[in-house]
Image 1: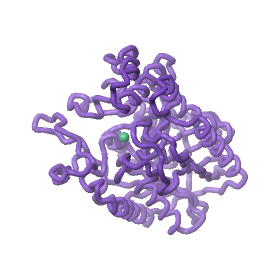
Image 2: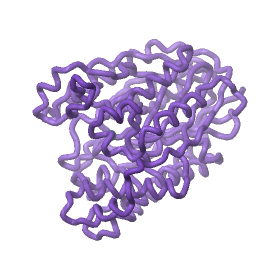
Image 3: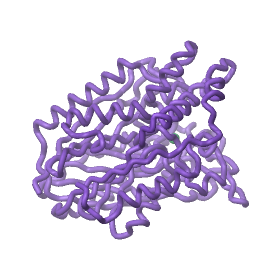
Length: 437
Ligand SMILES: [Zn+2]
């Protein structure tokens, strides 16, 4: 097998004044640090395979489809061989083109995205891929390792004695009591999969499940947050020539609430150091082995929307100018999901198998239980899960979580049927039959 990797990166920092997080927080006032899209094109295993990690809150529905199409065209492959996953920073763009059309009809709401900026990003992506393909690096070996991240992720759903959600442990100030409570269900491992040309590391992917938020949403200060800052540190300190990608795992119910008080801005630095330390620890354990097998798999699902959602009522809520902005902009995303379901455009889940390692790509904002489940389903393999692919369905709680209630369940666009659909999809992607390449 003759494999090579083309590595690309391009800037996706929004301009001053651009809306952030769907338009219900202050728009861009300053750039604390730039946002990037960083990716790999794997050549030599059938049609090219593209992986891309984007420093945005989310890419939903048509925006996600367009992004994958653009990268696919530049890489001369098909969109089903392109995984685009967001990191989910909040002082960052959260783009759904249909939601943007819906809010623009109102006239008084801040738009979701500037179309010219979005087009510029796609053009930059195409150019970056085209340029990268001129000088791909041979790859011969793969390695994987994991290291525990200390004191970063905690479960934000605080349950009462009956197992119902009592409250959310947020990063906002004033949650001191909640910070004392146990971390709850988390996945403490930062996973690392790296590709080599002989002994030289060419690309390293990191995966960890936590909302990448130290503080946000107040001042319009754009940042790639502590995960992007840790990635940059690693990029600077590691041997030159290696490209580092960070993916946010299934973090729908994971945040830094136990260890972080958004009042204390130094916490961003502390969290950066903790994630960076785990990146270093995992890197040191990497032992490259010859690549013997590469398989790409996809599985489409179209989970039905919640049956209590009515397009008419949602539109009325958006029209009601007495509602807070979030209660008008957010429903625009819901309406966009309903329309997408009517058009039967599925979500594509994918997995890249490299020897015993699996790079798993999931849509939406799944709860951490999904990545724990994925690893449990294949105990002999090393599963690294990225969430936040197509953001169309928003939160993906487990079936059990629907009965616990709480914020995420209330704003999820799908009902509990999404759990068995997603789990079955994961199982199919992890299955051992390697007929599909
Ligand atoms: Zn989120």
